[in-house]
Image (cartoon, rainbow, N blue to C red; front, side, top):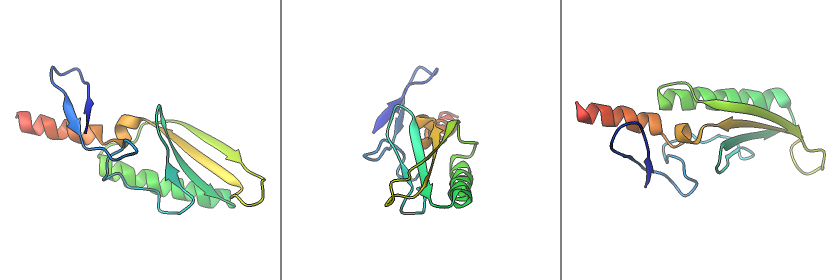
Length: 116
C-alpha cells in the first residue's frame, strides 16, 4: 500500500503492485511492451513497424482512460530506434504521470463518495 498526499487533511491508501502501479491498470498487450518505474512512468511499445507501435500505444491509452475515468496525463512521447539487429527497430515511450498509473484519481473519487 502507498499513500497519496492531497490537499485534503487525510491520506488516501492506494493498492499498488511491486512496480508501484495499480494492479488493475490495463497492461500493454504485446510481449514487447511494458510499464517502467519512477520518477515518471515510461510505458513502452516496441515494434519493427512504427504505425503498429503507435496503434498499440493508442489502444492502451484508450483502455487506460476508460479504466481511469479521465484522460491519462501523458507528460511526453519519446520515439527512438534500435538498429542492433535482435531488438524491434522502433521504441515508442509514453511518459505518464505515475499517480494516474497508480489509480489515484479512482481512489480520490471513491474517497469522496465515502465521505458523503
